[in-house]
Image: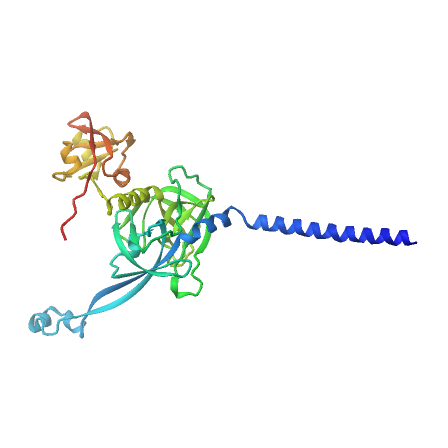
Length: 376
């Protein structure tokens, strides 16, 4: 009888141990399934994603009697007696950025810091620092802000030249900063929907963004300037804007490929400024009339209508009336192709152009020089 009791007790202990072991294995499996590549990518990049608060002063005019002075006769009689008053209004805007150098260099969008009189940067650990705009390039909508550095977390820069449509895309931003007690960034997930998109943005109707990454990862308001990363936690783009009819985060997101940002980061690190390339050949698309007048076989290419004196194109002997057909072996079909090529060039790079001049094919090569800046 005693032997039977011992056997029953041993069996019970075995069952308890087995259940406990099974429970531990189940918890481990659940934990492993939850801590996936997306979670690890967010954990890897998150500490380098900051909030950028910008203070701007807007000027606007207000007339005391707008309808009355709309009459030209009244305006002529009273002249400037009741001139419009100019008012100043301070406006705060929020955006995101990502630390790319431990010394305190932050990459963001140019439109986030445009016109900034004061920049305040909030780190995910809660620290708030004053930021200074180092330089910006409106052509690619990228800018660099500097804060007090020293062993800051840095995002890993990946590649945007080998992206695959359908691969994971993780949009990270930090739009609220010091406005919330929790200063951690926000994360949304989607896929790479398309590549090399050209689109006119809603918030800058005159700006045509070229060669953009399209993603369905929600880019919430204020996430502009934050990183778009892959499943390995490598930065592949900078979130720039979302195309939506409702004004929210639902819509199609667009990011500037990181390949453009690499040049800017290198320039800032080495020269303290963004060296803007200057080819200096102004072009227009080729119409049917122009094609017939020049005796061209097709409308493919761009027509040079003006060349800046002292520019790369000017020094290379490019003339008005030349038709650019290829650039660095890439086909130039229209203005979009040409503008995309210009955006991809950098100072010191040697480029080759294939040109039709007076019915003959001409090849020319030259080094891209830096755009001269106006003295302030």
